[in-house]
Image 1 (cartoon, rainbow, N blue to C red):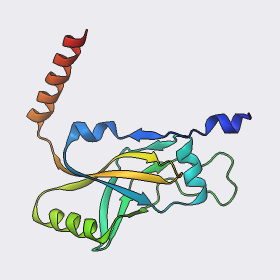
Image 2 (cartoon, one colour):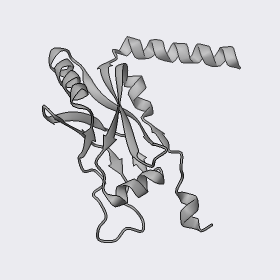
Image 3 (tube, one colour):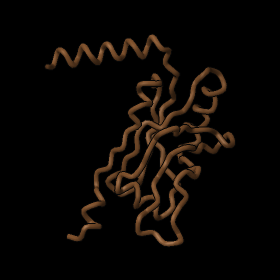
Length: 153
């Protein structure tokens, strides 16, 4: 098995760890993504960063993710992709309408929570309808985490 084959994994689960700290998730959706050829290869090597990633509506029926950094593929040629380009998310019309209405009504946002590869080899992103946490909520979560750690150890 060559070195290239060892780098590419089958089970990819990349999580946005900061999202659960800063936001309270109300609803989660699984969306497909429109990607270029070298992007999927970089995802399979787990070269993805969720720092500053967020989702916005370009129109009522088009949701895109901005700020998602997918590193340039090492062995790509002049066809390589831009690391920070906007990527369209593929959801059903019913889900898009639901998200669009909830964003208008309340102070909510759409946050990417994790990225994974399905058994068929497609890259999917889990996005969540989220509400920002206040400072005291974050402190409460940290206390709970410390209590659980003490109970285990």
